[in-house]
Image (tube, rainbow, N blue to C red; front, side, top):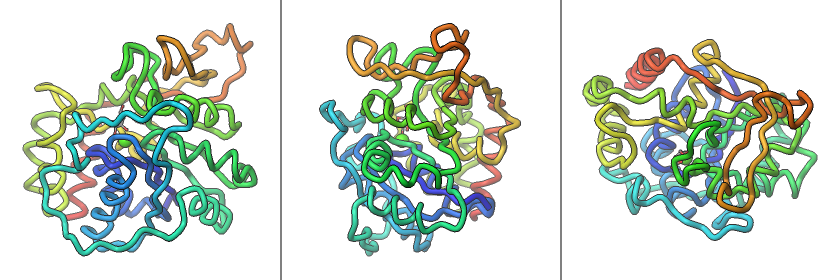
Length: 302
Ligand code: BDR
Ligand code: CA
């Protein structure tokens, strides 16, 4: 199984990703760190703990940054509800988060691992940027980053910017400049791999995990009648099924001010960076294969 760490802001689609990362036999989830994004970090931490409790898994959870590095914090409660995970009554006897911050927990976990580890950020990249600036010794111990965020095409926050990168563009610029292999799983694929109405109908028949996710998805403000995007879950699908994606290597720059703040600018023709690349960008996905894989993964949890 792939050893991984999720840095996340649950968040309804994050909750779906955590559900799979906690339970799929091909993943060995070592740590969950949380960040302010869809809702405040107090809530994203609580939500991560609700999920580890729901599945009775003792994967440690560490709370991280409460604010982006520079930009004022704006949540997405209009999409994910005030709690970030509305519509389901989770157990209330939750474990405590680790007594250290996300940055410390990330450092400890990455340095203690016996092999380079995969980082999966599905919120703003604030913790990741703080980690790289505070403890650069972790860099050679990271195998790769597979991050949800960004877009070569239009944004979902502004016309230029996707939410995770828009939330903390300065952190995103630091992450993309770190020199680690990064796969960008952005809106170009996640807005294509919508969970169809048929998949939604099947979910609650698949057992406890499917019922819980269906309840959350019913309260999700993203998507329309053609389907709902599972943004963050696409990172995990990529890790297990890269063959379902088309990718293109290019240089990604992140805009940190002006009207395009938060835009991920892909040097598609290699003209600006003389053919150098810093990212592997997902540009197409087999949406049908994603739906089938998602249903099978949830069903297997029971
Ligand atoms: C991203 O923004 C968040 O609201 C979602 O959880 C996802 O990580 C999509 O733009
Ligand atoms: Ca997210």
